[in-house]
Image (cartoon, rainbow, N blue to C red; front, side, top):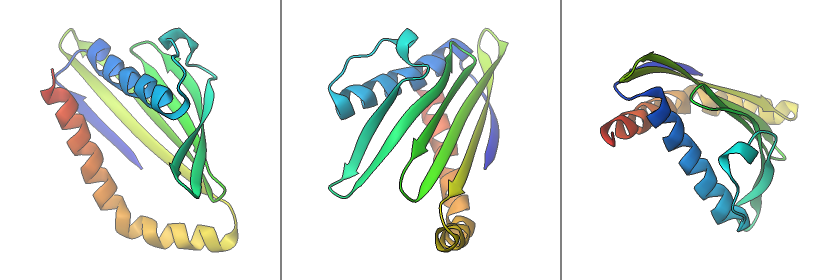
Length: 137
């Protein structure tokens, strides 16, 4: 999935909103306080429920330009990327990409079927999240 959206916020503001959320998630999941400059190549385990957890690996955190991470579970690997391009002092373009690799034939078939039905909802939810970040400015 790929979404490109122009937001009426500075690139710095958008990037910082993403990073603040990441730092909060790390603190909540691990109890560790990590600094922004330590994020690239940082990994941690996040527990979603008693039987569900994932390893999250931050691949890139380039200030005001890019944030990319990988979420790895026993069933799938997800790679999510926010590429940020400053258009002016008050506007930026955000390119959100999400890729999923499923493990096993049955899981691939299952994910493909559910993906067709869930993709529009995920897209709508992401656009709503971007709009709320814009409104927070």
